[in-house]
Image (tube, rainbow, N blue to C red; front, top):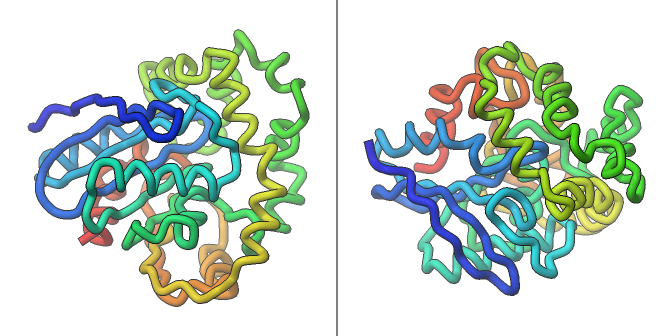
Length: 281
């Protein structure tokens, strides 16, 4: 099996940390969500290496091994930064996969970073795109609003990252035991600095701006899009596909990942990699 190589790439005034496996075929860039890091995608990198594919998992600016620089938390700015990364590394015909917050970035890339020729969006709702209003207004999804409060979540979570993150990982997984202590410790460490913790919460503080931006931009998009959800994630996938169509996407399909909740890369990596690989080809 090929080695997972870690590199740092300077883009604008941020340093982006990549975990990569080199093979043949188009470059696939994978973007994590909250409260995870590129480490969450190590099982996918291992399977990609076994298949001889070329895949990179990036730490978003400010998280794990990446510095934030002057990037803001809007998803279209992050998407543009990833496009600059692809240009910097000379990638040809790259694909983009985004999970959770990373999925919001991947959606933004459809218009802000058209260098990515195929885009997969995993386990997320898109700000400003139906059923956004229903999800954003759901009192059970309290963290969208709690994380947006200036300063307060930092005060309450600092020093308790592992316990706080565990609550979400356990709640949203099909089987919490499939997310090992090793991965949970990695995630807590990735957000353990004040910059990283604030960066993660800033993604939520930017959601109203993201929603306004996306709702105002509904020009037709022909880029092929794959929408992925775990079968233990209780949503109506058809409702999300209708929302994408309303927002201008003309080529969108979906796949449900078996035996998985929110973190399919850790819960059901074989099925997730197969879905990504098939779509990327």
